[in-house]
Image (tube, rainbow, N blue to C red; front, side):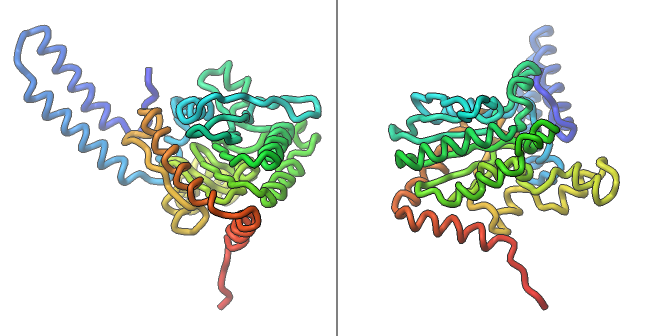
Length: 318
């Protein structure tokens, strides 16, 4: 059974009415097609209206939808001949971060992403999309491999944050992320990052120091989760909606602020309603970015990436 978000209930009520009319028509033999079509139009109009005026807290719910496409879904829909590369070469293969070589429009790329599960069993395998230091070290190994063999890098990010457990801290969580920030800034190949769901804190940024950063329409990108922010500012995580509004976490806000470069549209209802359409939009956006970046030299790529991040957070003293 599909998960229904609380703000979608008016649409579900209309759809239930349509189903009742269909069953009544079948059982009684009455012609109710005109009434059914009228309700279907109401449902479609309501859906368009609802999804064009979503609040940040509602987009937050969509970004966390359990049926939302995961990293490997996008890989299989956009690429061919994906070969996963395992391990950090220090003794661990963190399954929260998956990466490997694939063909994108017939050309080799390194594609790396944060994977979530579709069931409890899978979420345990992928640690609910929360990477440990070994995952970031694996990603760094793949970044360097791509740089050596002149392959563009694509990262797809969906994480509530890096794993906050004691073991992760003991094995250098902060240092591993910091190392990725430094080394990604030095890459001599095109790097593209896409926030596909949750993009929270350093856990997301550890894969996102790229020439082009894009977001799916109903994803979010922030330095702290709205619940975490509300807990700090108001001592009440229940005020997450206020925090989401204040943090400006949506793709439209971040595009306006210059934090991201492009918003990728989703089907009405969210990415989980049509995997193929979402992957097609994502692929088109990547194609456009690669075409532009492929014309730049290694030095130009490094300079553009460095300047892009240096100019974030500018302010004026009055």
